[in-house]
Image (cartoon, rainbow, N blue to C red):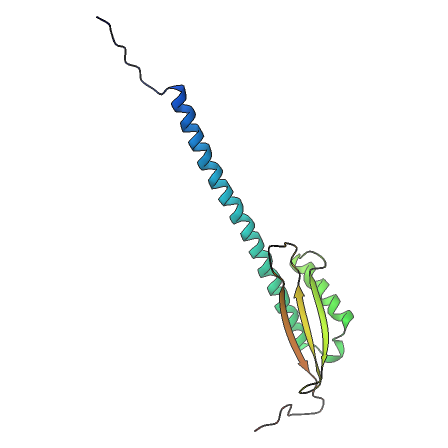
Length: 140
């Protein structure tokens, strides 16, 4: 009669299969984590840029009309980029003169993201000139 020895434990093949499954699971989890980290970083940059554009728009609205020229706006944009630590050349300020219905200027603030995955953001601010006038529009 043969004696049967009982062995406890796993075979080498079983260990290799378990490790392969574990490695696949870890690789999947890491890829999801990397994608989430990139997305969070892009969203943070977008929110920073939107806040910066909003701050510039507020500054344009309260500024003296004589101070609103290309050099001043470029200096304000550079200052905002440094404060918010945005990359250089990402904020563009374009001034468009307006004459209808009344004289004024339209300021177009454009954020050009460094990532091609994100769209540009635009914010438009209008400043109408109404010197020595209490009423800028006709009342019905």
